[in-house]
Length: 147
Image 1 (cartoon, rainbow, N blue to C red):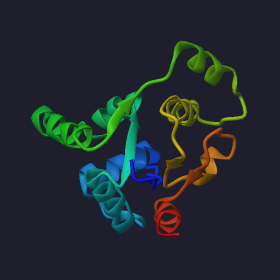
Image 2: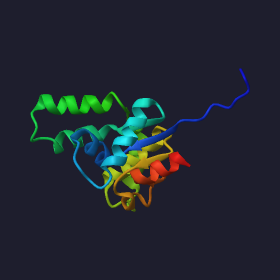
Image 3: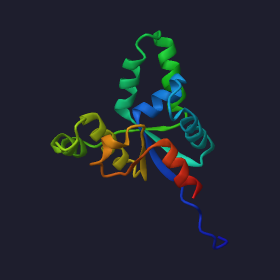
Image 4: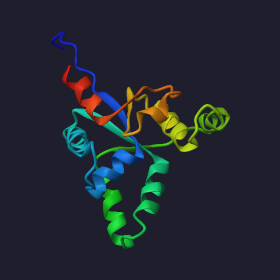
């Protein structure tokens, strides 16, 4: 060992809206940043995670596509980032956290906690004001990485 400290890789949970923008290649206010973040995941510069339930949400959102296309889209995503779940006790805790207006967002937070993430990357930061893991938008994450 040469005594150099190895740089820790940033761990981020990719929220459903960010993952959907990437796989659908839709144009939104964070498209450029989202594609850069996903490229960083591919390169191994950051470790990306996806909450398990995001897959079924995206499957439903993409219901106008045929099944084969939806499967390819989700496989593309799963080949880039790691799918993570939440423990039974974390789900029970999420059900008890009434300060979250959207239960799905609370589940995102619990999955991020399970994966020991540093941040949740979302287009809707305001929905995560009660999260245990800090939420940032894609632009903010790239700023954090560049600092």
